[in-house]
Length: 140
Image (cartoon, rainbow, N blue to C red; front, side):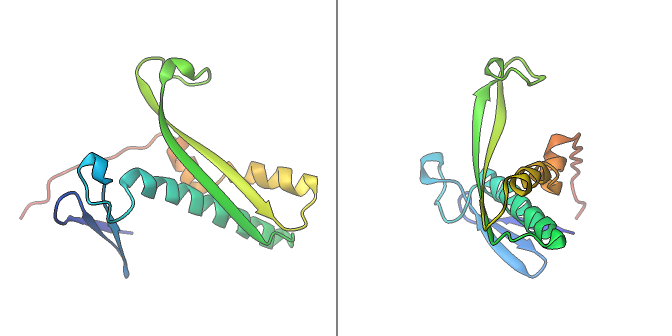
């Protein structure tokens, strides 16, 4: 899968993912035109979309009456010293908070299991594991 991002005017970025096109930008307060979601908002959307899809697929496979999933993601930067279970102890770290609303006549064990399954969303697992980002200049 290739994602191609091309700078537009100002901070606007034109994103092409296969046949899909998106725009990313920064809010006006950060010098952008606020013409699309910021990169962190796109990251939060990826986590939320993956979580909801993972839960829907699991519930469908089990035949559970899950009607809708609403996943809300909040991104923040917190002081590392305020995070008791983090390895980093200095500076600031990124924190993603995920809140999941499950609609449908599910019983308590089903809801509990779906919460466990949310931790297995592939994007969540990618962000929670070692990630290597390799950068190179493309030769003309």
